[in-house]
Length: 225
Image (tube, rainbow, N blue to C red; front, top):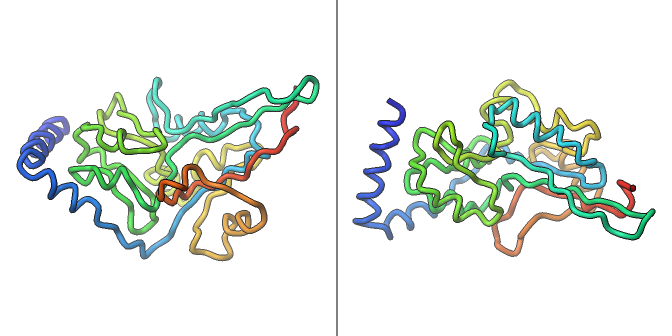
């Protein structure tokens, strides 16, 4: 039944795109006013040890199939000369953009920004697997889930942990507290305090996407050989 509904949406989408592609592209760029929270994440690279506890927890909690991943920790290095060598660990996941290229190109509304949380999500029921969002994502973090056959990615555990009033799985699993999650609209939140306490950066800000995943840059020597 679910596949039949998706097939119907896919066929209908193809007809509409053929008839009025410009109309879809134009309407999909309309922004959504966020009246609720504005959830964001900080990855402190100075604390990250590359243990992958976060990605393992993400897979288990969100039932992510083998072969694909919502979250990866990429290892760079070693840098420097022995014995003063070090590695850098960076997080690769959805950047939860405020200006969302993936939402703009989605012809069915499957990719959307939740007005209550500001979280960019995917409605798998509406997704027809056209992969427009995958092509549009400048961070290359979206994928087709081999089980649902819909686009998938990190959504800060919106449908799992957040529904239970808990922190995202990756945040809870991190043994070094390298991850901080919270509401940017709350001036007393831990994430706002962390962002005010240390210099930070975001990826590809020159594209105007305004990502809500912040990074505290790693320093030489936090992991040595």
